[in-house]
Length: 348
Ligand code: NAP
Ligand code: ZN
Image 1 (cartoon, rainbow, N blue to C red):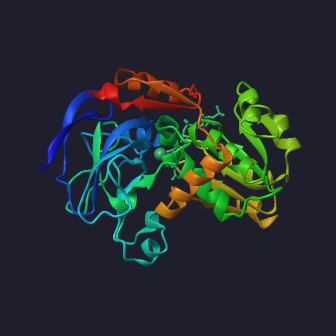
Image 2: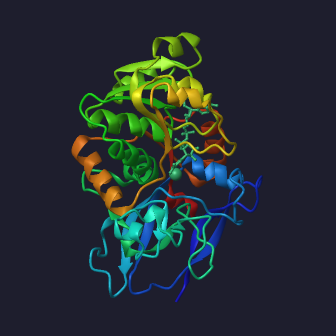
């Protein structure tokens, strides 16, 4: 039987979050029922709660950085059992048959992967995310949290971690690669740690120097303020890869010029308005402008294991259900250090 769980939901673009109950489906044979313990607040939650990408479904229960404990499994579930500490990220279903699903890149499923919230299940029902106390997810989309990572720290890795891990891996970041990370928020502060753990020489490009000490502690070698014009002069042709985690539009040309020959600017930040750039910024040094979207399930498990091995740990601020509105405001002011995580016990 389907059953109810407590959740936080928003009814429209400008409505505040309210306590409510939602239905979770009856456990299917491949389903895992999870008691949500913690859920991170990603800037994508804000974009979607405020319909900035123009595709919002209301009422909305956001949340795709979910960490919790398994409370029941369907008959056909083999890899997970009751009591396991687990995570769920941005995806909860995909066709499992197309070339991308077969390759473990479910985010590119040709049928369209089902998003954890603000999506629709293949039966047409809207999906509700992790700002809730319980969720039912198909086994393939549930990963194991390594013993050494506490659940509240695991939560942000399920989106911020995988979204930064995949491009660093895909563009072969390793010993000595010169990587710059633009924006030191939720994604950025994890990206800095991951790139440093992979052996890169990491530079943070932040609006100001106010978080410099933290950036260096996260593993960056250099830290520059993008509000200073001199930064762009000094850093011309410096980086093999730039990871742009900023939620707003930037002057793309200025950043492209910071790339060395064959360097790549990878966008993971997802502003709602289009960017502009000049072809000559690419042509002159055979540079690439690229993008990357979350990651598949094998990479998600690999990322968690990598974080456990290398001590990559998000910096979090634990909040209660009633603080979500304030937390959104603080994220929008770049006043997040560095990920808000909701204690799901407070959602009752
Ligand atoms: P966040 O915590 O708000 O971090 C973004 C950072 O960007 C801020 O902390 C700030 O860092 C910088 N920033 C903000 N506004 C800026 C502006 N106007 N100009 C220059 N820098 C600015 O957000 P997040 O959760 O990390 O998410 C970042 C973006 O990635 C969002 O657009 C989100 O939707 C997107 N995202 C994409 C994927 C994907 O699969 N591609 C997955 C998750 C999230 P400083 O203070 O250091 O400048
Ligand atoms: Zn996210």
